[in-house]
Image 1: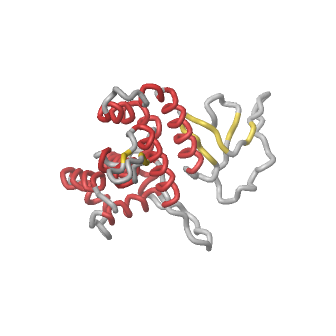
Image 2: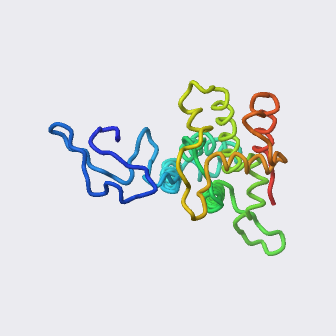
Image 3: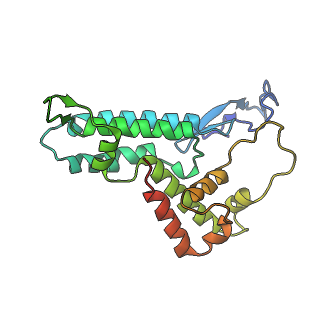
Length: 236
């Protein structure tokens, strides 16, 4: 149910289940909705993070515009502007990113957002031959930023959180939700990617393909090394 306790949402493969029905206990009526915001996070009946990531990026843009005059001030150093971006803007965009399930499309949207933000923060480059000013290329932005991009940060935070969950034990509900298999059959169409599948793909990037990550997590030092490797992995 929503925070104001007047609406409810059904998460089911059959989206027509109870579609036109409202719950009416006593003299109150609870309207069925397809999405709502709870504790700052957008939840949908499709269990999709597209709307949540879209909302986070919109909030990040609003946050940037609130400090735009500061970031465009030419007397401030590049390092100071990047520090402002990392301490004010980035936490707004990556709020609760540990729970996100990313597709390649969402990863691209996040990288495009960050590159645009860095383009605004970092000064253009002047060509030595022509003397003309131009925007920095993505590779140049990465070199000047010298920090893991937002997708790397999300993956490392997600792995760190999975380690916390794996250590909770079977008595905790969040652990049981992660490791237990629901009853019933999956639809015939291609199964959707799960949050745990993202963890396995992240491990595959650092040479951990096929490993039982629940067992690996029990070695805290090894798991921390994998989290760091995922954070610092570089792609062309």
